[in-house]
Length: 254
Length: 254
DNA sequence: CCATCTTTGTGCACGCGTTCACAAAGACAT
DNA sequence: ATGTCTTTGTGAACGCGTGCACAAAGATGG
Image (cartoon, rainbow over all chains, first blue to last red):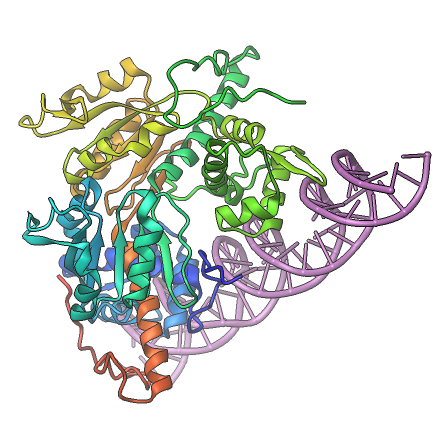
């Protein structure tokens, strides 16, 4: 049962709760904005509003990092920017490889937010020989045959997977074997990795489906309020063309 | 003062916990795979493995939907696909607009996963007059002047924002005013919306920063284990708790 | 029909995360 | 120095999510 974990078992990294870690980048972004406007200090209330969270939560989050505030005044913006950056490991440079240079991979390569804060796209890798040699965002695409060498030579530890789902696990395995220990997965697949490797997934389809759920609920409530007749009347008409996959009529067994 | 919750206050939609809703798409994907391979039934253990979750959790999740399993046998794949699809509102068609047709917006427009299950890109909208009229993924880009009409005419209730952060809030406001009630936000900004509007955000930069945190932690532990001369060498003084006083090096990550 | 075996559905306990509420700490004015 | 005022840092309560462990339910075979 060497099954890799997909989800971190709440390791409680170093006393800093996972939920707090996930919010630190949010605070950092808000603080950077203040820093650019030369705001010297900020209260937990103000910063919380800017980050869209509860102020008590923010204070508790910061308390895990240490006592960096001054009572009666607030937090020193520059100092806090530095402390959070350091805590997140952004004072060093993280080389990143992107594997799978389709539309999404190319978009990410061009995405400014990548380079902005401690991350540097060290290489773009694709399995298509046609792609190799092409320039994207000023970076030459390399063939996946050289994956291991590229990762080793550049000391890369973070990989981004933007391949089709069919090859994602296979790519993942090679990345891990080559020394990658953190993966950001855009492919709609459950990746299995050994212990010690972190995987975070970004799944557009899932996000949309969650929105659809709430949207449906809203429509249902609204309809129930206006009238009992059905909002979802023609729901299952749908019919015809349907999927490349064996999408089925889905009969109702008892 | 404007309401504007960014985070849903755990509405507990209709007895179905939010955490469960977030996992339903995962189950649905695994089930679709089984369906394509004509697997008739599946046990909670098998399906949980395929979805990368705990089997008890999966059973509990399904219990919120009803008692759809058969003890001693498992779950009927087709039936479950239908039930989950219905619960998520995927038996109807959801028209979606994408606003901001840069690299990312174009990538999403081309993304197959969009159309695959209940979602249809009804329109691509951009503020640049140069973009208007161009064809992307077989869809003609329209100018943002027509945003309200497009949304109204097509009965769109879900919007995707892939604009630069500077205009995201403004675009969001217009979308909401035009009738959009669910937003998927890719811009690195905290969006403020009225009650009744759902926002989910996808933030590449934040995901990377979370990975960096864990990566740094791993490097630190490793270095501590192998003693002093770790691979990352000059990560930082780290050890002692810095100067408690305002001795601030304060780096400025642009 | 009864025994056995498999698998679901769930009661229960536990831990994490969130929020409230307030005492302690420091700034600032007099 | 002293009092007042602001804001932090945190103890404590609460609710949600998770996972264990098991009884109930149904299939299956004799």
